[in-house]
Image (cartoon, rainbow, N blue to C red; front, side, top):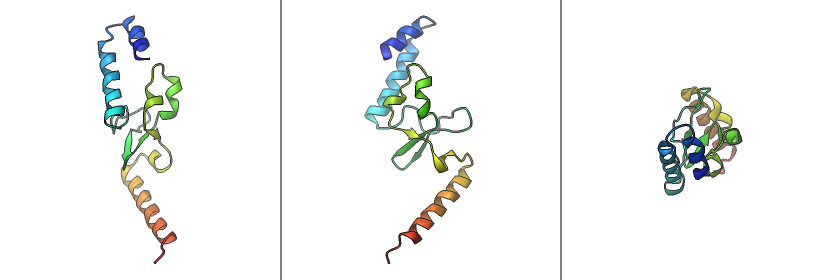
Length: 110
């Protein structure tokens, strides 16, 4: 896939930068077990790649088929859903903490 992308890009301009982009993304995904895009990479619509513990959330994961030569099928990030779609970080933290409290009182075995 990388060879096809570089050949396609060579028709427009130098493919060296594209090859570096793919190499860095592959290193991030396979050596560091992280997402192809770094955490907090912004996307249109105001959402970004986020990390919650060891889980990475990407707002464009399900749209990989719309982008030719996308690395999304190989990326360990999951599609952003639920509370991660809230753009305001303070509101998101408040909702997450409230969920932890409700879970505690629901599943308390003391």
